[in-house]
Image (cartoon, rainbow, N blue to C red; front, side, top):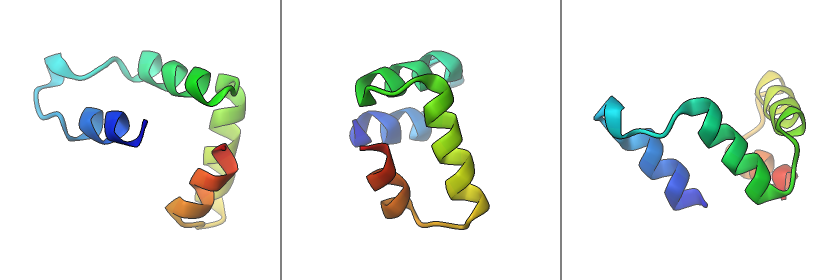
Length: 60
């Protein structure tokens, strides 16, 4: 999953990138979370200035 996310973010050709909303939904489904849960975890982590590892551990 990490490789898929990184590849999508690094893709320079906008036409080859996955649609942001579709990609977000796909990640939520792969994690067994609802889209609102995924967004809530991301928002709370960014507000508190938590690092990526802590954010990742909350997702799983």
